Length: 382
Ligand code: GMT
Image (cartoon, rainbow, N blue to C red; front, top):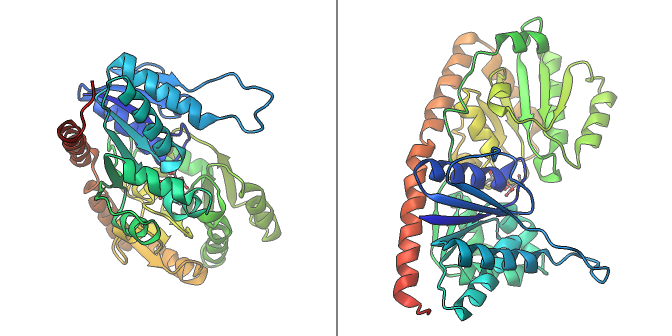
């Protein structure tokens, strides 16, 4: 199949899922065309069967806001028409789904029927998409997509509850590539961070408000009072400054390290003992799954799709959003004995295995084929 994938080029979330999906499909022989405003972070310099198309345009002084959606629709049109694409798959509804709809209509006037699949990822539904300005456009473009997928059952339900859509939404969960995420041997690195063999707690995110970084610091503060530990914070974003200030106020700066944006996530997770994800909202929690694949138990909130990944009392623990005391208590419980730690690590990996990319990839391929067949049977173009 020739597949155009529209995504954000960012370090985490939907951009990572889209890139890893495209890379895996390319390895299976599909021809993948990425469309984004920058080369996606996890896209290598060159890979067989992969082409990157940058959405770029010269701005004009009249535009206070560059018309990105129009430029994207134009780029989708161009790629589909001249690369003879079979299906367009957009990740994150805003503004990708509506841009794809516009491109689809233009292509129709050129005699080309292009099927469009939209994957809903999280904040496009649970946060940004609910904004009164975006809501009607999100609803419309979901309804007009030929196929819609959501990354968790929770997100699917929330889409039905908050948007007046009645189309079928297929749940295709996020996935993990065990070649990149497994427990690598990084003992020298662990020693450098925790010379006295202190447990290492880790958090990885884009440091947005929704991630509740202050809770991450709060949990660590309580754990550290009982058991000398280290906290590694990976990623960057708007809340980092506040978190740094909080660490200074709590005199934690010697035990907390901010590592900023990192590429080798699997290698960092190799030295972690507990992963923290106390998010306010989390449609899936890909970073938690990556941690589990690296045998790191997860202390998380019970928001959104997290209970679909993290099994309470087995692969880690779930608590109500904001219950920092309970989260700290649970982290200490896991860390209490080597045997307990081992059991949680084993269960985390076992659960992560159910999201192996080799199980999830065929679900996408089948969904593409079903969508192509549906469009062929109902639309007449050219
Ligand atoms: O808000 C983010 O963390 C980024 C966002 C995205 O779409 O880029 O992440 C969402 O998609 C991820 C991949 O499907 C999910 O693992 C995250 O849970 C989800 N984030 C939220 O729901 C907050």
